Amino acid sequence: MRIERPMTPNLPEGKWALFLDIDGTLLEHAAHPDSVSVSNELRQLMQTMERRLDGAVAFVTGRSVSAVDRLFDPLKMRVAGLYGLEHRLTSDGPVEAADEPADIAALADEVEAELGKGVYVERKGPVLALHTRAAPHLLARATVLVEKALDRLPRGYRVIPGNAGVELMPLEAAKGAAIRRFMEIPPFVGRRPVFLGDDTSDENGFETVNGEDGISIRIKPRGPTAARHVIADVTDAIAWLQANFGDPARQAGRDAAE
Ligand SMILES: O=P(O)(O)OC[C@H]1O[C@H](O[C@H]2O[C@H](CO)[C@@H](O)[C@H](O)[C@H]2O)[C@H](O)[C@@H](O)[C@@H]1O
Ligand SMILES: [Mg+2]
Image (cartoon, rainbow, N blue to C red; front, top):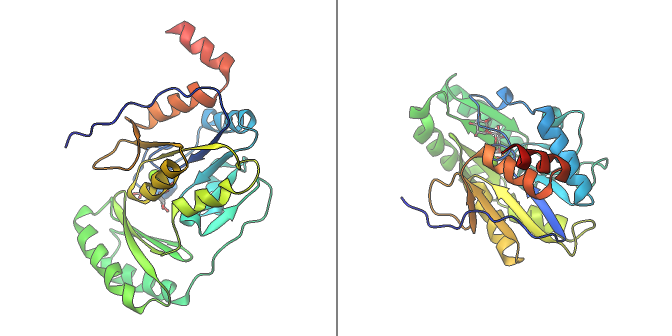
């Protein structure tokens, strides 16, 4: 399917607030969630962007805040984790977290037993991710299992396709709401949001950012998207961030070398 979208423009100087998905946007996908690693160059870019935007930078991710901290260690950023069920609103502040309903743990045990070792069941408290990258033939079965479980869960839950897998999450877990929460407080308030994401769960974030006259960018879209701009892959996404919010001296050096 051909997707007609303008390539992502360079942004004029302005008061921007930057929201970033992690997997598939800043990091290439890997065989297992624990196999990814963050380069020092990416850590440095995050710090530079935070400085240039007066702190108005946050990760908005399906990973938990603790998982993000492990990845970016020793860097601590503002984060909406678990699709906004967790928030750390300042880089050194506390993490506000949602409870794990007991049923989810029981469901994770059942699903694991049913699907066997080929599927990695990632237990993230109130969110459950079933990773089928190593066993793509089990994706349909995994999806049916979590869809069937919807009725017996204690409060509203939904199933969203992930990248090579499927995730079960409470209805209130939504990247758009997570972005809105940040936009109400300093240093984000009064700025124009920019959001980069790569997946179905990012679509709701794109809609929110579009509604705020912001810039929505989808990396490597595989189908229709609400994002108003596209970027081909992770390498290009990082280059775009570098060009717009990175160290200007470094960028000048790159431009001269080309
Ligand atoms: O919202 P994101 O920051 O994009 O996080 C989405 C999920 O990312 C991770 O899973 C995905 O990336 C893994 C590493 O590349 C890959 O092995 C897996 O197949 C992908 O689905 C993470 O494990 C999840 O918890 C996040 O929700
Ligand atoms: Mg992603």
